[in-house]
Image (tube, rainbow, N blue to C red; front, side, top):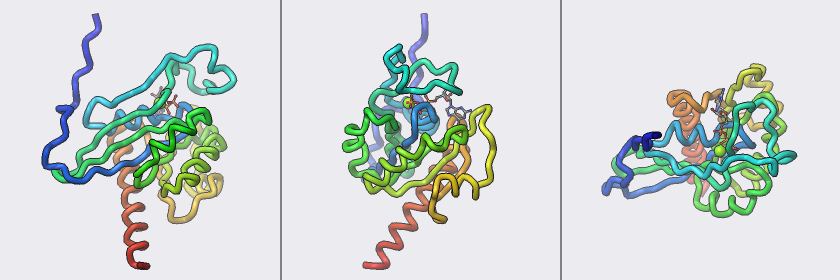
Length: 202
Ligand SMILES: Nc1nc2c(ncn2[C@@H]2O[C@H](COP(=O)(O)OP(=O)(O)OP(=O)(O)O)[C@@H](O)[C@H]2O)c(=O)[nH]1
Ligand SMILES: [Mg+2]
């Protein structure tokens, strides 16, 4: 008999928390969004995984993901308490076109997005960037390295993804808390700098 998963932390939010913020974790099919949210969340994340069936053939490309059996069908949700006053909610947002309508709710009130990308197929990320920009979300990029993925210089990836110079770009392993935290910090620093900049123009 399998055992129930052990909660990482009590599920209830500390009653000292006064400010809640929200960041989306975006990316194409199978790039590591569910893994990333699960790595950083202090609570057992909410997941909406469903087993993939023959119906996904032609839609969700399993090349390079031989062990993948499930896909997220709505979102991932995790929580990170940053200080007694401040909590961050992480929402994993599915990248496939069929989930476009979900984005309206997922993006609502978000400070920005971390877009996960995979060097084995950077072009898969283009529709995700289009979506993030369509919803007006500032973003940073974390390149996850999968086995078989070539390593490129930062400048090459920046060029291939047509990123602005000030858009954060880091390499990341979504399974690793330290590397995932660094990607989040880089994004938050970027969001903060933008907010300060906008404030100074008012
Ligand atoms: N090597 C490597 N594998 C990863 C990384 N992140 C996730 N994976 C693996 O990639 C597979 C897919 O990860 P998921 O987290 O399910 O990806 P996803 O983006 O949520 O997938 P969908 O919801 O189906 O779009 C899993 O087997 C993960 O263990 C990473 O940074 N590096
Ligand atoms: Mg997922």
